[in-house]
Image (cartoon, rainbow, N blue to C red; front, side, top):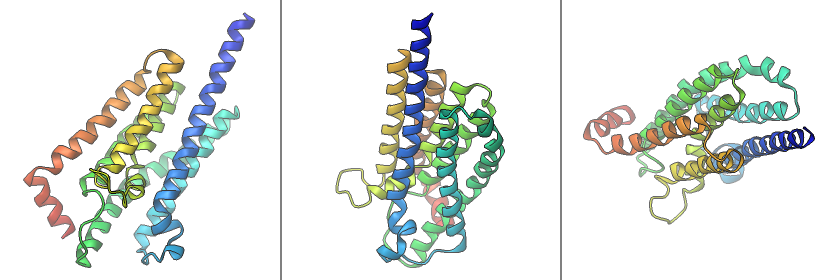
Length: 241
């Protein structure tokens, strides 16, 4: 019995370290990606932002910080506070979807309006990221009574919206496929970290990782394929100008 309890305690501590570490890592990556254009824009000589972009930045930042707080509360054994904050997280998640869509379109419109050369990933990539976030996060909230499912789906949903800051990190890379596909490729590394954690601790993938991760990858492929179609190219051009 003592050995079983020790193993259970070890697995619990390992779980807390992994999900807590992933939350902190994503906050750091978000800061690095958006530092030149948002967090440290004055230092980098960034352009003034519209009110919508400022609101998006505040809401996006709030989501990332709340994700760390929620993960920390669970690690500290304060599931009561975690549940108390839950409705705020749900409202914030709902707000992020239209804000994410509006921001992606406004950025592309601004580039076209200033006659700047296209930069960053195609419009379908951030829109696809928001769609993936919406589906996985909604599933995570719906599965909040099943802790193992909930934490994996919420993690995958949050990884999905890191596509944009990670794409910005790879913006100045000279590697092939960068920066257009850089954000997607780097989010896949984060997904692989969850896969590795499951295999190391469980010996197999948790169903949430299997199905949520499969959906995650499927939407990435769909973005690439859809972006190559004339119909989408025409629609994207009509929206962004």
